[in-house]
Length: 177
Image 1: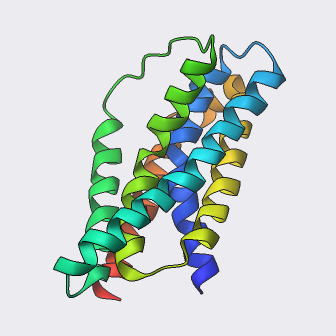
Image 2: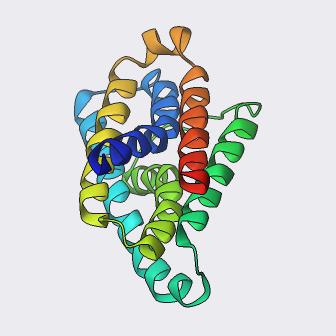
């Protein structure tokens, strides 16, 4: 059950990277850049929950008696934030150097840091979760980049909506499960 739950969270966390990579896929110049960008996103999706977990286990466990509530609240806030971001028009600047790659990877991985905070408080297996988040985010980012032109017409912001709904139901699981 733990593996399945991490997989669902990984998919939810990967949806913002997926939807943005669809947009960037419209301007993708080569597959090497797609591999570099996807790998960077995957690496960040491993380390961000790990660092969040360290901070969460150090601070949050001292102040919280029911840490599952924190994970639920974080997932709920992320789902609401994703819902509001659906209204915003995405502006795409071309990825031209390593700083753009790292900035993209960092920004789409911030939500996994927040999940890591909750995982640190609940003593979840952050290494297993991080590995699953890495596989999900790499795969979704790479597919979004490669098939950006085709997927943009089909999915567009629907991918973010799916991730939003998934994180919302996982929040309910942590809050009431």
